[in-house]
Length: 361
Image 1: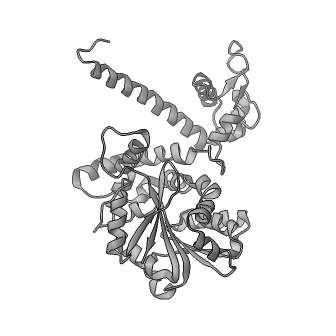
Image 2 (image 1 turned 180 degrees about the vertical axis):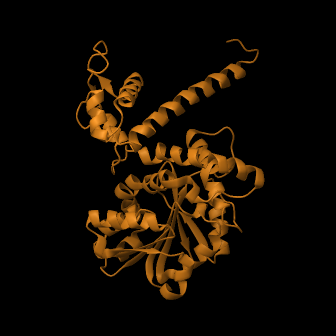
């Protein structure tokens, strides 16, 4: 290929490589959704994999060959007849592809959302023309499950430590034995569970409007052995204000604020729910303080997520602030100020994708 401007060739090559990466990502999506990686817990021929996973042999054969060509699975002898080849999923790749609380397991973050976006594409096209939004329900189970699990490892392995190190007064309160925590927009409950495990005397109440997510949260809490100290309520947090005023020592809004159509009333309610010496903690996307272009991979990821989901979902419930994923620190400060808070502290927590804010006053 020849091009007068090297930038033309560079973009052409970039888009072709992106196409290849997207196609391979979608084959990984098939492996995750159909349970093919889980079924490769021991080496298998195509027929064996088909039997374990409940798929057709011809599809199993093609998928295994493609995965081997892509370097995701290993094959014992490429020269053997195709139905006799034995395929193995290496343990380091299993860690990435089979969903667990391991920080390297990023199927929820990097694979499942593709299915949700694919499902929503027709309505996204219409929304961009009309200015309307696209409700979360349009993105289906793939987005729900992916979004709920995307921060599982972070909550499990890092979140309680951040409270201990960056909010020592809150940590001390949560260890007293009668502390109460509200997890606003709790999803599948991973943060609530992590806090319940870290603070055996605390009681955690998770709020969300997605009943299916909360059913999963209850199952997750039971599996973790903390069901007796966690409660999950299908409720808009604003509707709980009168009942729960001043009840909580810590109110968390974790990776949720940017998706709320009306963030200020929600923060005002959080301020109401905290006890007189309680704290409000917000975790949201770590983005640059000002628009910069071009930007690094993380900023590109946040913007692409906003374009494809978070902004359309936010606009689906008018009147909406239309925040989107790229919510900068000054945006958080403005929302907090309008909600009645006097100060916003950016906590000294190093995490590539997220920033933590403590709202005071």
